[in-house]
Length: 206
Ligand SMILES: N[C@@H](CCC(=O)N[C@@H](CS)C(=O)NCC(=O)O)C(=O)O
Image (cartoon, rainbow, N blue to C red; front, top):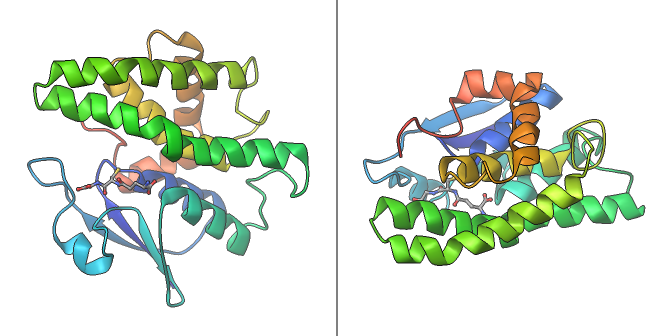
């Protein structure tokens, strides 16, 4: 049985979206955020990093949303949310999928947490890095609806939470193509079902 340790307002929403797309039965274990918007201590009893998402599946435990997306699509989806292995498209898609957490997410988290802590100078130092990442995504997207073409793949699922963070940090409006891209993501039926089940990606107030 697949179990998803699901923290409110978190990257776990990506996993729930793919689970909805694949129609997988799942034991959804929910965790609320603390007043400081952190994960509660119980998550440390699940996994040493104390973060979400984490899944267990037949005795296998995995953290890292990109890894979990690849694993679920490979095991249960016949890799239908990735381009065909061995093609240039597959390699490009892999780059996008890894880019989100490896390069893009850190600076936007810095902006959000620094502004929340009243450390504006630190936020301002990170903003150009977020803008560079956003410009790179907008260029890669071009006039396609999704990164790899007509339909969302794992990289678009992974992108959803990063773009929602950028919107909350008020950094998305400078990139209107990405505002539209995020609207397309949020209009996807699988995304909507995941949101109805797991709650919104971002809180009203941060
Ligand atoms: N690179 C990891 C990041 C996981 C992560 O930072 N998750 C956040 C939620 S969005 C978390 O659990 N934060 C709570 C905390 O650090 O207290 C991934 O993509 O899964």
